Length: 58
Picture 1 (cartoon, one colour):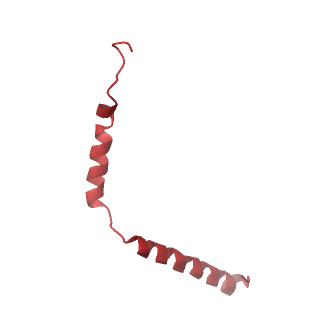
Picture 2 (picture 1 turned 90 degrees about the vertical axis):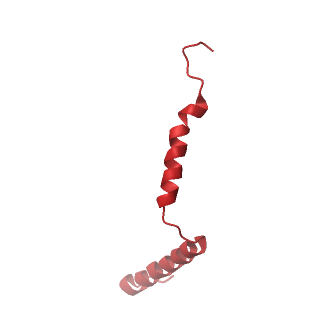
Picture 3 (picture 1 turned 45 degrees about the vertical axis):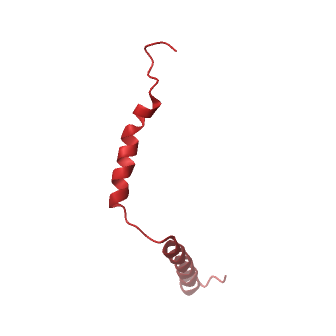
């Protein structure tokens, strides 16, 4: 390597580590089970609306 190249990979990622640590403290915390149940219920609601509005059978 020449002396003009930046070989400090750790130094270049220090800002990202600081950013993600900072964001983690302010993040909304949800239980993964809640997200899964919400996705299932949303899917059922979409299927029900398609039957009611368009007469589409599953």
